[in-house]
Length: 187
Figure (cartoon, rainbow, N blue to C red):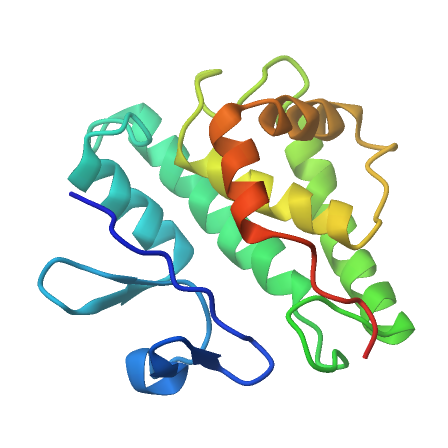
């Protein structure tokens, strides 16, 4: 598998350098990955698993092993309990909640679920078998969103340690540099 281009999506206008994002992905949200066949794959958990299997990166354990099922559990938990709870019906303009009402709503939804992750990281650096895997990559997106929203992780020292550890990784630093400055939190 070879990655050629990353195309940013303007989430306010739903456009890319390729044009109308809705024409590329009818779900009209990110991420979307165009496969070698030309089709688009969506959903973070599925894309992470696909990348792992196509690239031979050790992001997912062998299918049907106990470790694999643990990774799938975490991917689904992050998708349904964390990622989707960052979305607020009160947000205006960009992908981050950017009104006091939306920030309060997100905080009240996300932080009880983060407490569960905090406990899982009590005696280890990574979610499954103390080895970096796809769920950790996805979890970092969530902790990065907390940072962008100025939600303190002070009450979650294990999650804060995880976030700081991930930020030291050269690949993560490269992605953060490419991603650029956070979107405005103003409406």
